[in-house]
Image 1 (cartoon, rainbow, N blue to C red):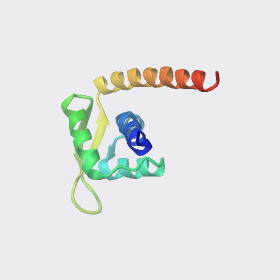
Image 2 (cartoon, helix red, strand yellow; image 1 turned 180 degrees about the vertical axis):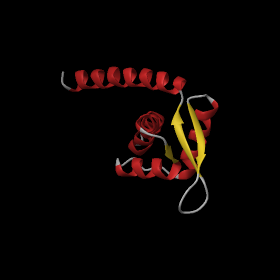
Image 3 (cartoon, rainbow, N blue to C red; image 1 turned 60 degrees about the vertical axis):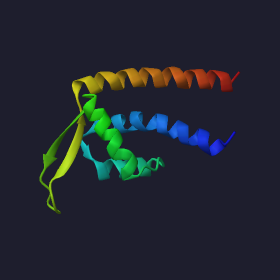
Image 4 (cartoon, helix red, strand yellow; image 1 turned 90 degrees about the vertical axis):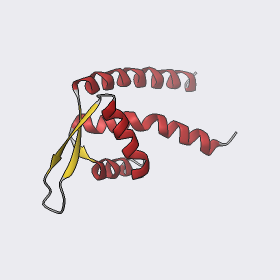
Length: 108
């Protein structure tokens, strides 16, 4: 079994949750999201992020608005919808259950 493949799958599973956590705090545009994920050591490229943002928008978990920029063209700022906030609450509950389970097993 390839440990890098397992690690990659774990990161993919976390990515949606982490993006939604960031957008829960404040609306952001894609470059901001990538930078904040990078600061958290979760490296994501635009080719991965944009399809995920589109899927979340199509599922009505995110919305966006165009905001004028002082440095170039308008930017698309993403934010959670009400449905997205409810979904995030469910993800947070699942995350707590998973971490409790892993901590219980690793401390047994």
